Length: 237
Image (cartoon, rainbow, N blue to C red; front, side):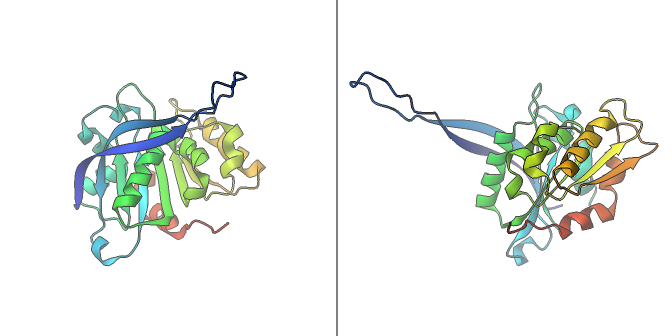
């Protein structure tokens, strides 16, 4: 497995709104605020990485149970688990870890993607995001944050804000959920799919009739899932 543990310093810059004062002795000011965030993550490079000019990126977001500061917990589920077992992927696979007691912060994930693009040969037209449970919620949220930068998303047993679906309605999406999920109701995925369709999208929804909350094992073990991802490319539109 060509994988390594890394710590990156992700930077995000935001600008405060200028304040105008009636007093002519005071001038409007613009304040640049630099926010720093440390993100620990596993990164996997395909075997032929050195021979390619550009490589697709798959960002994997874990669930609530894998939060903390022990990166080995991130190997419990998903693509990172499969890589640890010896599976090869045609993607750069990046699996960050969310700190204990927090949820995925989209501004940190965007900064992480920016940082990765500056260091690795990532194809900007083939950036994919997938996640399970809390990571499924994070996937929906990131799609709303940067819909024009992603080629496809695959949220698993998650949910989101249906109001935001308008912004990424046309983004290729494949949603997965267990019909017997008692942790995250199936209706949360169904509502997001319906909201996308309302705005002209054509998301796919796979419901596992006998699955509970674990609807990710069957998904990530399915070769067709990765074939579908690789077939998606960011549109020039």
